[in-house]
Image (tube, rainbow, N blue to C red):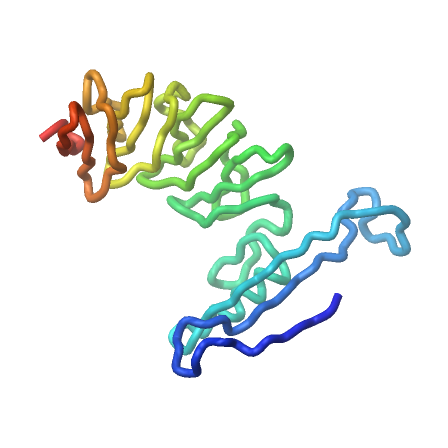
Length: 219
């Protein structure tokens, strides 16, 4: 390993520049039957992590936070307590009190703030929770999962999108629709297209014209 440092090319007066670049490598042997032993023969994986740190006087804790992430991985709370350790293949930010992670077999599940795995079912694709629901895919079926691991609307959609202000865009049978938090579809027949909802309103397209809908229906 060779360290190489380059001078930042941004002007001195700039505010959006790279303050530090760190390359962290883990040398601990992760094979369960070798923990605590030395001079171990054989191969093991070497995981490399590139950590980009951009911070300034208005956020003095960012540097230490990123350095800690490089050294330890996993999640750390505001008190510096490590919640989960170094056991995930991928991890998403916490949202609605839970965070999506990959475990064995690269299936997505999610954990709570104590590091406990909440969901018993694995997913092939996972998007962070919003309005208490995360859109997920298992095989070819899409649906939603709540923060307790329940799938309130089944996995019967062709595609689902993240909820916003009580509405989620879904596709089934080639038709777009909006789904409420209670599981009600706004349109009986669906639309040709739609935009993702924002501020409680979603735009849709039908017969070349556009309209809006909220959780109470088309307006």
